[in-house]
Image 1: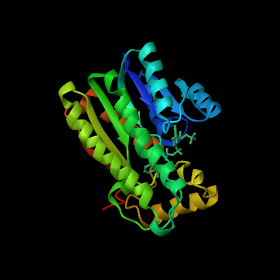
Image 2: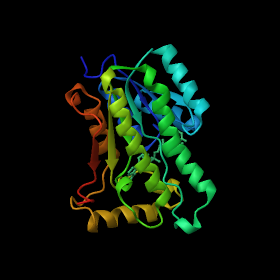
Image 3: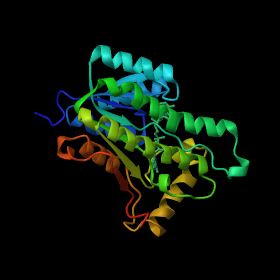
Length: 248
Ligand SMILES: NC(=O)c1ccc[n+]([C@@H]2O[C@H](COP(=O)([O-])OP(=O)(O)OC[C@H]3O[C@@H](n4cnc5c(N)ncnc54)[C@H](OP(=O)(O)O)[C@@H]3O)[C@@H](O)[C@H]2O)c1
């Protein structure tokens, strides 16, 4: 019997990158996995590739989150693994040049979306359930030009720890995974062309990351699977940095 047989997992933002790799890993371990994304075609393609169940939902939109909740409740009645992963970097700007659009977009997806996904799914989380919130090492860095993204992830760390305290009596664990540079489409979706994004990752790995590699989505997926497993039954409210030593 596979480790996650009979477990139901929900992965937000599962059509690419870390969410896709995590969903694929959880499926391979036997879980029934529902993945979400905004783009119908992309989410259906990804689900078909990995054997997951697609659900079109914009996590920034509370109505979509509630529709997702209702669908999962009616079909499965529980969630054992909740991986709150959907996120964007938004545009880089100095604080004095920030736009309201960029602020709202980043905060609505990364923070409000994650907050209400967690909030609404609590009733489906029973004893032994695991929540993993995908943050970033930037939650604890203060680089110029990245104030909104950094703040959105810092806010996530805060709610994850409060949730760990609130849900501990239910024996539900909540942990934070904070990757460093990880080779995904995240930069190209922020408007950086693929060649430049590759160059940034290559340079980081050659000069800034002590393990001399950029993380892969699969590296992060393995950590998410570990934290979702009964092996991690005594771990809650913790942040796991996975960055090849970048922040040392
Ligand atoms: N890559 C890194 O270096 C790195 C480092 C630290 C943290 N992170 C975090 O890791 C998470 C995953 O990013 P990634 O690197 O794997 O990038 P990615 O490949 O762009 O994946 C992001 C996923 O989130 C989805 N998504 C975005 N906005 C959404 C929304 N409003 N509703 C539903 N789904 C939405 C995307 O779907 P669409 O394709 O439809 O947009 C995609 O499936 C993010 O929270 C990011 O901040 C990434």
